[in-house]
Image 1 (cartoon, rainbow, N blue to C red):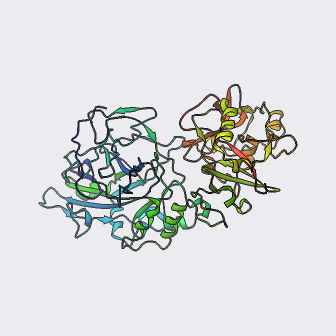
Image 2: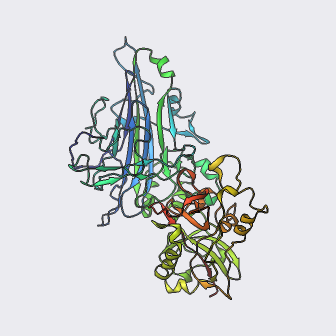
Image 3: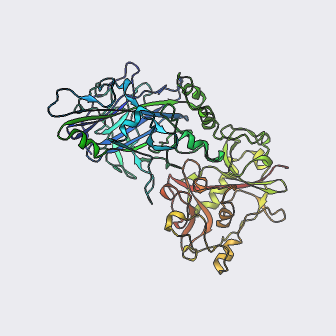
Length: 558
């Protein structure tokens, strides 16, 4: 991992973000052009707001990773668009012939926009010129590996939001750094790595002293991409989702224009899942050129804006899908539906502003500086809520202290005045993981136990540990949900409607109050096992990816 030192140059004017995939004479090369961000600098203020498109490519393996990182301090919204170019030449011919008449290698603006069919992102639209590429190039969208956590990446060192270079690694080539070359030889990498699949892993570091790559002379540690809640899809497919599933960590492609939108705010320090995971040539290209040459390219444009500027995506003169405005508004608000008089999910409001009786289970809201997930209406004015994000770097064995500190230090008096009394046993029930049965499919489908309602001494005790209001003997306090609480609240129309809904905010794991065997604890997993119940998690685990997740029962009539 000893990359060649690169010159660090400042960008003098706004140029294209493009990615160019080349195959000449049977050898791949790759170029990444400069970012075309509607504004990579999102605000002309002192707060650092910006994003960087990452482009990892390896010509030998055909791995091709495209995603967006938010290195700034405020949320952003992101979109990406692909266009393609292919030309061929037989050995006895002088000139290359483009697949699409009127296009040329040197003018990426006239390349053919990738347009999927309305019902299938993996099939180019038949009525569009993009369909001509189906025979020769296969694009692999999204990232999903059975049983694997989301991939890792090296965060950008370049936090200059006036510099529109991409984080291009391996055989990728940034358009500015590579001086716009289209010869498949000129170097233009701006980021460490060789572009192969899974090049980076957890707890790796890179020292950019020198600097070796554009940006700050610091040591960065690897971070993890967000896992995709669902595979990339078209706007028509998105339209058919239930409203509660329309905002999340996945890509949605407007098949009218080819723009792919990240269907969620990308918060500070987050990186999207992959839009593109590989670009593979088919065997048909060999039949077409025999011993000749071919040149295939992918050009990628990006747009990065702050949420309050999302109309920039609409006011670009293109004929967008009729529901794009709804998607963008939903991303800005964090929710697709209007549930009465309650403030929007990202709008921090006083407790008095909420009508909890109208809230839907699973609804996110922000109250007095903390963001919560609404779990259920318990009757008599009582409502169960849970902090949306787990408190990171806290462990199961520290729960009592963490919960007490959260209640005393994080809640305003107005919120404390609403908290209902509950009783939590000093010694919580213990349930050995081996006692529990699961549906077929192994560790990847641990949604609900299959023997939860069957008689068994340990299961009976765990099943009875349900959190309720106790006016006589309880005290107002924060608590961790029990295994029984999570099981009761999981399912369609409930506080945790699906696997992704059980993961803590910003993709965090969280521990329950139910103990497992020995020193282990029951937790809600993240990454490749996201939302699954896990009963053998070490109770002393404390890391930056999750921890204790405080819950409350509040009474709206107090």
